[in-house]
Image 1: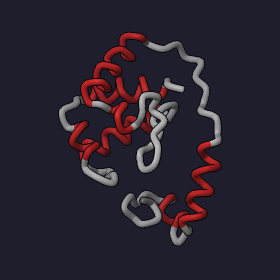
Image 2: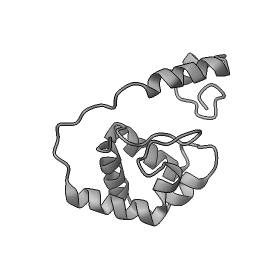
Image 3: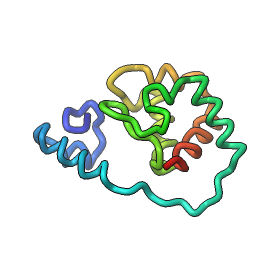
Length: 127
């Protein structure tokens, strides 16, 4: 999406300009082998429970898998940085960020910002 300017975010768009599919697949395979970042912070069970309820209600675990590992054109959510997830969720909701289809904006539209924060918190603590 960066290479094809569907998501135009510098420096990613510039870095991936003209990169062949095989090279993108090689980069993805290398990145997929990296360990998730560690978190020493104790998990807030109340926030996690709120997020789990939202995930079940909106079926996030259907596309992103039960362990939030993603696959194919669906990104991994587990263990991503919380600030990154907050920004991504807000951008999908506002249509500032595009996916391959409109499903993310549709799912996130009814959620308020506190719910987005809980989702990002929960997902960032998954391994």
